[in-house]
Image (tube, rainbow, N blue to C red; front, top):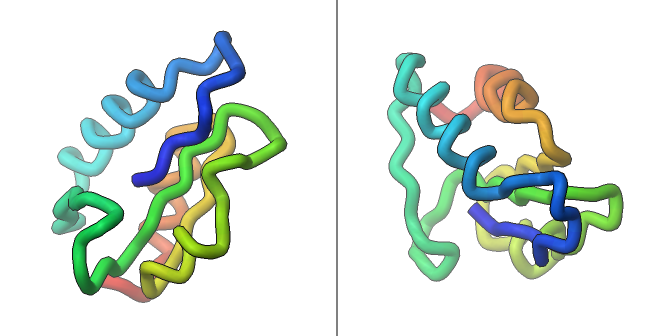
Length: 87
């Protein structure tokens, strides 16, 4: 996961990720959360609190097979992951 800079004070990035991890735990998805510096990353999730999207950078997207760009709604993560080709 790659976080934005946190300029939007109405958007709690830590809470969004916590909610996301809880939703993942409720599914049958087998996900392991690793550092952006890890090798062989399948999915990068860019978490942005505003339309500027400062976490969505090409050098981050290029580290993974698939990149999901998120703008504040955790449910979109779950939808994107279900539609993903990665198992």
